[in-house]
Structures are given as C-alpha cells and as structure tokens.
Image (tube, rainbow, N blue to C red; front, side):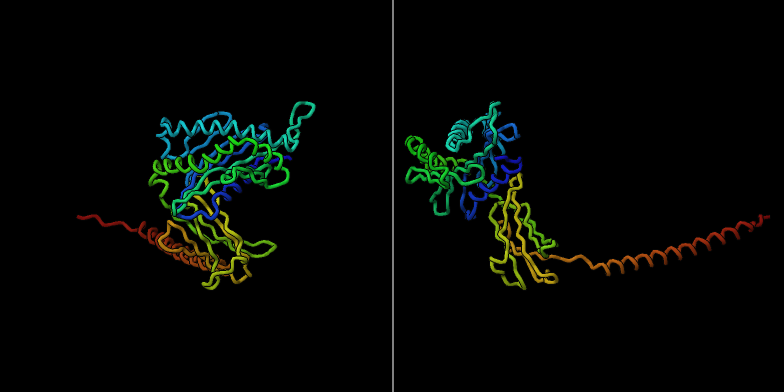
Length: 355
C-alpha cells in the first residue's frame, strides 16, 4: 500500500474526531494518539505520540529523540517533577510496545516481507488512540483502539479483558494478544485507575488555563460551482472544542438531513475551527442564517451572507466619482488661471515713493 505524506495527518484527525465526539461541555478527558510508519524513508516517523488534556496538546514524543517535550504553558515548569518523570517513562514504554505490536500485526498480514534488496516493498501505518474521560456524574469511560492502514483494527474491552476485532484480518492478532493475560490486566489498570488519576493531576496543574473559554469568530461566505450554489458557515479560533452550529431558513431551523455535518478541527495553537455547508437555490441566499452556540458566548451568535454591491451599482458609483473628480479639477484649473492673470497684472504696477 503506497501512502502519501498527507494521508497520515488525515487519518490522525479522523481518530482524533472519533475520540472527541459527543463530549459533554463539563466532562474532562486525557487522550494519547500514537502513529508510526513502517517505512521512515518516506519522511514519516517510526513512532510519534501526542497527549491531549481537554482537547489541548500538552506533550509530544518521537522515537528518534526518545524525549517527551512539553507543549502547554501549564506543564513547562513541571519537567523535573515526579509526574513528568512518570509520563516520560510511560511514553518510552509505549514506544517499545507500539513497535512490537506493529511488527506483530504486519506479520499476521504477511506485510513484513522484504524484497531481494532487503527493503520492504510497501509502507504501512499503525495508529493507536488510548485514554479516559471523566463525566459530569464522576463516572469514567475509556478507549484503547488500534487502526491499521486507515481501517479500524482492534479495540480493547476492559470489562472482559479481551480484544474486539473490527475486520477478519485482525482475528489472528486478537487470538495472540488474548493469550497475554498479564498485559490485559495492565491495560485495564491503566484505563480504569492510572489514567483517571493522571487526568486529575493534569487538571489541577492547568487549573484556569484549561477552563478558559475563547468565543468563536463566525462568518458566512458564498460559493459557486458547476454543481450549484452553496453557503459556508465558519466558526474560527474557539476553545473548548464543543460547539453547535445550525442553519435557519426564514428564522426556522432546517432539518439535519438538509445540512452537511460540521467538521471540527484543531488549529495547532490550542484553538479550533469548524464549518458547515448548505446548498441553496440562487437568489435565496439572504433567507438563510447561521446560528452558533458555544460555552464562550453569553448568547447564541448569528451570521448571514452579505452580498457585494451589484456590478451596475459599482459602475454607477465609479462614474459618479469620475464626474465629481473632473468637476473639481475644472474648478481648480479656473482658479489657478485667474490667479496667474492677476499676478501678471500686478507685475506692471509700481508703488510711488514717499516724498
């Protein structure tokens, strides 16, 4: 399977959106995203990890440096603490585990074969998402999921200590991993005990910063294509990630089936952006309003598309300005001409000397 450099980013965003969907505004989460490629010559890492608390990136790690790097202000002065030391050791352990699991999965797919030159003929990608969430009622939930070459692969079930295969090709790996009872219990302990405890510690460190709310900037733009006309509502630079966007027609909500689902993506600076698109009939654009609700807003925000002035109006305005310019230029020319004539007359006049 040949993979472009942009594909891993898209897959990572897909896993990320899956982990965050339907998260309550008052819940808190700690998630780690792992990604690696079998062929590093393509410019992709063998292993890379990113950690998020309440949707905010706070730590990163890669196999080449084997170092955890702080990515949030509230964690910067904790790099010598016991908590940071434990986190760094966990990431190094996950680095080793990830690579072993990667080769195990490729072996079960017969994807680890090499050519006569000793180079793998294909590149493959493994992704993992694991973490926990604390809900409003103090209950917790967790996830530990593998994706292989862009498809769901295996998911760990803490209650039953087994793995759920998402496709037939994952069955061989499922059987092998379920033989390791010790690892299964360790996974369960991390998801149900260690992860929630770590989340509470991080929330305490980032108290205030993690709870700040940045309202979105909202705008509606108009787009034309051979397939038809559409309006696009964009919400920009907001935090936290939770947002609700709706289209109204004549101030009445539209059915969900008439609207493209909103896409919420991280900006990379801790804030998010979202957009949704609506197909409209030409001439009806001004009947639609985008309504946005967000924790950072005191009340819902609405935005509509404001059409630019028509071509006729623009031409008329330009013509009017042109006429005015010529009019004032003409007046100025007459004033200057009269002033010059006056100066020439004054040149022949000599004042009488006083006796």
